[in-house]
Image 1: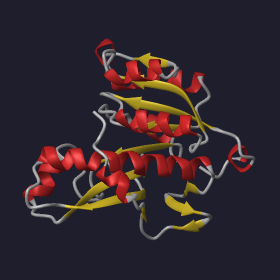
Image 2: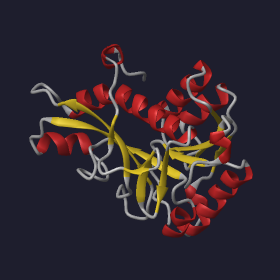
Image 3: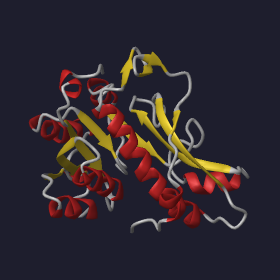
Image 4: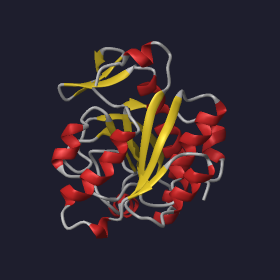
Length: 234
């Protein structure tokens, strides 16, 4: 993915968001869009679960929605084809996996390489997969965080663009970690999508480029202290 002529010209990036749950990350993107701080058009919110609360959130914000019930398909490739037919139909330039719990097939991922990102609640490469908060506590780690990465066929294994970090407290439980991390995740995702919309970040030959220069480590996104104190939206 190279910086697009549209981004260079100051036009808005066309974004499709895939989700499986409540859609809080989608809500963060909508809020930034509406505030005029994120130059994107959210052209589709799609889910593998027709009853996902995130679809109702999208409808209320005027975002087109699509539900592709995975139970209707015998093969993963059939589900992928149905879902991404909708993504292509709206001319999406970037696909954001925001709490999307369905593993996409390698063929689909390769077709969108450099144009698909995922947000994951750990400091990758630590703790890919599920139950990240429990894993952090079980390992006795003193720091936790979230990562946004380009999607590759390897689960949570694509090149990491940026991360946000926070300390682990002695009193933390998995639930407390999740609650404190959530608003930081939102800030991270909005920041990364903003960089992509501006054409400042891209993927070339498996390498993250930032302003045309290969990134040797993930960007660290700083979160304003006021935002850290704000209760996580439910």
